[in-house]
Image 1 (cartoon, one colour):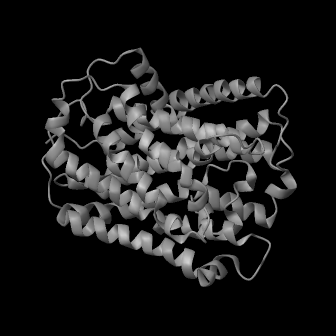
Image 2 (tube, rainbow, N blue to C red):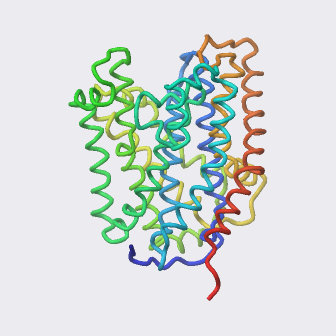
Image 3 (cartoon, helix red, strand yellow):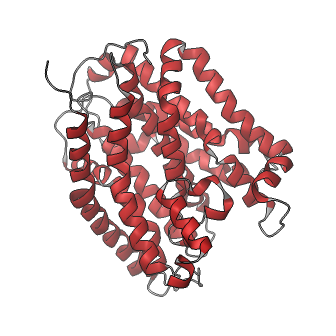
Length: 390
């Protein structure tokens, strides 16, 4: 399988380490932590609550768009190998994820549940990243409500070779086609989704129709428009913008990225409508709009940044550990709110202290994950895919 080659200038930005992108990852991770800290605390309403209501979706959307943005150039190089791509992705994602799943299931889930037929099915689904394909395994024993995105991410790795080649060969037509596929899926769910809901959930009325609709809409096909935006943004950046952005006279920094994210934050005022299938227009396009709003931020983040300031270093540090932050924050919130997998009523006494503990312990776990699991595993993946010198 081959594709048109895009000539990419070798700079610090293309060598694999993009400090601005790392900072953007760090911001997205904190958005998700803030959202779950609020949503798992019984969702108190206050002026501007919609920001926290939407931070979870916005942060996840940023992660998805960034994945496509960062990974698609592999398939635009001469003599690219699918084997190399999948090996590196497996060693990047699986070790930290498997450790998280095993620890949570062993310590959060009663043995009688874990060793039951349903429990074995759930464990198998989680360890193969197929847990979010079906409602029966989507919960992950309620130990970690953030794991559903890993199913979508792994399906991206399977589909990305085709999507990236399509965009390289016909940038506008392919991008619009991919956006149309995912948007049409969500429109069908919103306007005439009874058949799809019944396919996934049967005729049971135990799960509210709104939850059923969100589950169906958030299958991989519903996120294809976001991945298309990320791929197209990278194609255009490498072809037309890289030199211009690298020659900017001002210094890109963490605060500029945060400021450029504000248009997407303001869009979160519509997040409740976007989660209700009855408002099918918002339900079908909201995630796409937020993804498009992220594109200018990604372009600036991908620029060759000057030596970082202190705030930029903090952003890079958080971004490098963003995967660990994402994996560990949800169960730690359950612990510090004393909710457990049974989702008992949260204990919010001394809640500011609890939030500080959530953040600090999450960063501690994320640092362990990064230094002891993620980096060593990535090094193994690089060694396995290193091509011998001719």
